[in-house]
Image 1 (cartoon, each protein chain N blue to C red):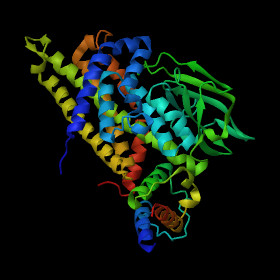
Image 2 (image 1 turned 90 degrees about the vertical axis):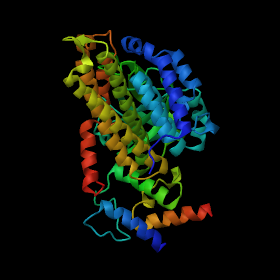
Image 3 (image 1 turned 45 degrees about the vertical axis):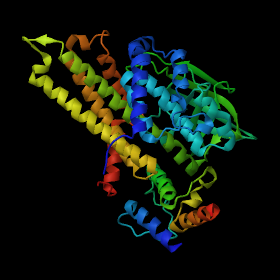
Image 4 (image 1 turned 180 degrees about the vertical axis):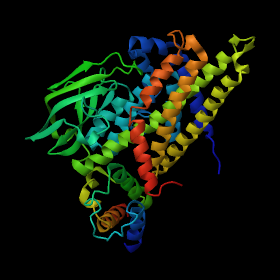
Length: 81
Length: 379
């Protein structure tokens, strides 16, 4: 879980360059995230963790924080096992 | 590092080129004049599997990889940008349904799209909203088991003949997308004629007057769930347009090389004049550079790399601006002939200009690419 969080943090750091994101911080709250970044985020999660984001996963709650993203990855990875 | 097509990709490329030379190039000026693509050609595109280009075989598609699909768009773009547009829009909707559609939506539409029984169109733009897509005004309300849409959509490519529309609206201020059949109650269509370029794209304006559709026609989700749906389609559209622009510029180049070797002025062929050589050189170099950018974007797309989004913006920006310059020079080299309907280069110029406007204007691309640069994505 921590390893995955580190990967997610590193990816998000590209976007939040001068801001240290907390694991429970809402990445959508401060208006930094635009639609193109949201799409990159979905692609990142799919390619980095070899999972497939599906229609039912497309809820903002799953992408809102580093913690939420890590949970999503864990849940999707577990369903593959 | 090896940059090159596989044997299969080369084989497909040759087949695309032969098809375009035989079935499209001889007729493209007529399509442009008549502002229409004949149904016979659409049937031939379907027969070849080009309307389900990237769909898996289980849905009747050709299962093309991203590079092969790009090569198809280049060749179609070389022949006729309107035909390329038909294949592009069909793929945009098909891939969106494949990725984000429900099981029912996939089963209902994808095989019929591959076979050409269903032509699809992308309905985002409105009379008052183009680049500022977040502020679309089409309203969506939920009433019992239905959604009800009201608003207008404009400049909808192949809207005149589409059987199925992917329509975007706002539900309580949150964006969302729906599949709407052409005969849905409250949906009507008005053809749009007289455009500058891609004149055979059979554009239409759509009127949604309390258009009622079942709940299950929603694609993806409402709000955040809509973003990947819209952007998958737009991103693929940009990628297709970028390749199509390589095709336009390649057509300009081929026309200019031929003409410069036939036309004599001041006692020598045009090709001997150094100012002509300069324009030809720019075309050669820019076409090659654009093709490489498209390949780079396609390669990353194939990997599912998040940077493919940026690389697609870069490829579309470069290719579309380059195609306009190449077509402008092609008209210049052809002189009065290039300005007349007797030669295709005037069509290339008109079509190229449209490529700088669709799937994100040149200026929107400049803003987005700079934003990426500020985020450190500059290597």
